[in-house]
Length: 485
Ligand SMILES: NC(=O)C1=CN([C@@H]2O[C@H](COP(=O)(O)OP(=O)(O)OC[C@H]3O[C@@H](n4cnc5c(N)ncnc54)[C@H](O)[C@@H]3O)[C@@H](O)[C@H]2O)C=CC1
Ligand SMILES: C[N+](C)(C)CC(=O)CC(=O)[O-]
Image (cartoon, rainbow, N blue to C red; front, side, top):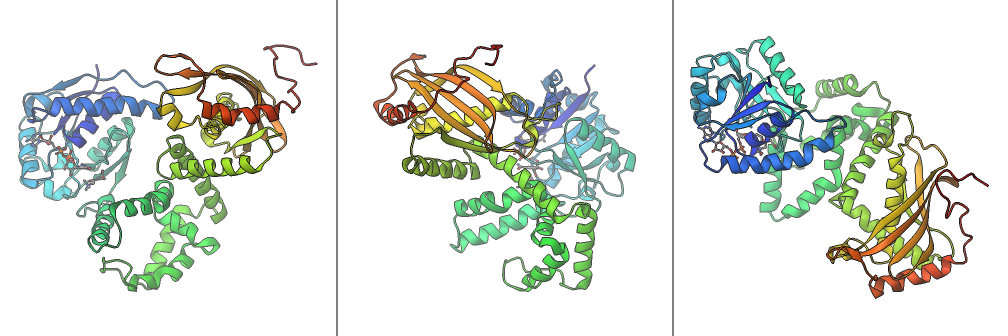
C-alpha cells in the first residue's frame, strides 16, 4: 500500500511538491479550487518526469497515484503528511489549517510559506504543534532544499519525522533553529532582489546585466560552496580571518543600499572565523581550491553540454580558437579538436574512466570538427547533420580521475555523403583509445542520406587532401577481436 501525501494548493509550488512525492512512489491527493489546477499540475508533472529521473543512477520507484480531491477533507483523508502551498496570505493559510485540522488534527502539516514564521502560522490553530514551515525552492521536484522551521510548540520528534519524510523523497531538510521572517535563504534572496531593484531603478544595470553578473561569476561559486566556504578560499592560505580583516572595513563603505550592518569588531571576526574553521577547517585551502575547481569544471561542462550561460561562453571560445588554430596551423597533422578532464561522474566501479566516456570524448572531438567545417548547431537547426553510422573503439589505456585528455581527428576519407575519420583520445602523448568512425550526411526531415552543403564540402576538402599525406593508422580497418600484428 503506497503512502499518501496531501497537497493543499496546487500552483507552482504545490505542483512541484506533488511531482516530488509522486515520482518517489507516494500517492498524492491535491486540493485546489482553481479549475486550471489539474492542467497546471499535469504540466509540472511532465517537466518532472523528464527531469528528475536524469538525476538518479538507480531505477525510480513506481510512480504514485495522483488524485484531485473535491474538498480539503477528502484530500487529507488517510494522508501521512500534508504540505500546504496556498497563496502567501496569512489569513488564507490560517483558514486552510483550520479546515485541515477539522478532519486531520494530528497529521503533520508543512507550510511552503516563503516568509511567515511558524509561530505566526500556528496562531488560532486547534493543534498548533502539527504546523511547521517546510519551505522549498522552485522547482521543488529538482532542488533538494527544504527549510524546516519549527516553533517551540512543535515536538522535536515530529520535526525529526518530518525531516525523515523529506529525506525519503530526496530532499535536504535544513533545520532552521531560530524562527525569523523569511527563514534563511529568502533573506538572502530578498537582499539581492532589493539591491538589484535599486540598480535597475537607478539605471546602473539592466536585468540582463545583473543576471550575467550572477551566472558568469559568483552564482557558479555559490552553487557549490555557498558564501562562507567561498570566502574562506578567497582569503588564501590565511583563511577566513585574513578575509575578514581585508574586507571587514567594506561594511562601512557604500557598497550596498542595505546599510544596517553588524559592528565590525574582533568579536564578529572571531565568531565568523571560528564557525568557518569548524565548517571547513578539515580541508586545507589548497584542498578546497582543488575541490572548488573540480566542482566548477563539472558545473561548467554541464552548462557547456547545454550551450547555456557560462557554457555558451566556453563553446564560443572553443570555436574562436579552433578556427584560429586551424586557420593558422598546417592541416598536415591530425587536428586537435577537444580538451577535457576526467570528472568524478566519469569513474565507474572499476575505479577508472568508464567505457562510455571514451565515446563521449570522441563525440566532443567529432562535434568540434563538424563545427569547424560549418556543420554545427546552426547547420543542424537548418535540417541537415552528420550521423555516426559505425564506430570501432580500441581501449588502449586506463584513465583516472583528473586526467587531462585531448581528442585528435584524422580524416581517412570523405565524399559528399560520407565522412570516414580516425579519432585518438590522448593523455599527453599516450593514446588511451582510438575510434574509427563512419559518419553519414543526412537530410533530417527526409531521414535519408544526401550530399553535404557546398560550403561544408569546401571546408572539408582541403583537410581531406592534407590528411592523405598522413600515415594510415595501423588500427584503421581492424575488426573486433583481430589479433594485433
Ligand atoms: N513561487 C515561488 O517561487 C515560491 C513560492 N513559495 C510559497 O509557496 C506558496 C504557494 O506559492 P505559489 O505556488 O508560487 O503560488 P501559486 O499562486 O502558483 O499557487 C497558489 C495556489 O493556491 C491555490 N489556492 C488558493 N486558495 C486556496 C484554498 N483555499 N485551498 C487550496 N488551494 C488554494 C490557488 O488556486 C493556487 O493554485 C506561497 O506560500 C509561497 O510563498 C515557496 C517557495 C518558492
Ligand atoms: C521569491 N520567493 C520569495 C517566492 C522565493 C522563494 O520563496 C524560494 C525560491 O524558490 O526561490
